[in-house]
Length: 144
Image (cartoon, rainbow, N blue to C red; front, side):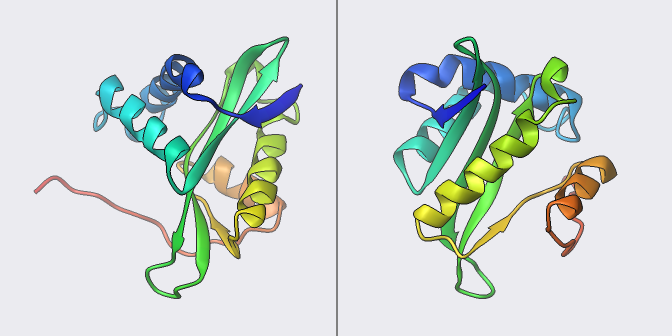
């Protein structure tokens, strides 16, 4: 298993995994636009963020993307997770946590003091807590 920074040539695979993640998550009825996913991923890679890919035998099997910004409440430089997905057959190993740890390391190298992540399920929340994260809030959304 290798973890590396994504390149523009990785966009098709990033979008493929991203859309698969959306299809099984809480945004499945909200997000249906692969072109927007590609634009967002390209923006993350070219701006204040990174997308990391976990590869097995040269094939991307997971990703973790984040942006860095001054937190809107504290002003502290914060990395916020935008995307985290691991193919189902790699979820019972160390791939997901390896991606998270690599993202933490890269974010710190880029000047982030904090990392903030979202948990679409209680299971994901428990995983964050097991590696030292604390729950801050739960988000809700409504169509206006």
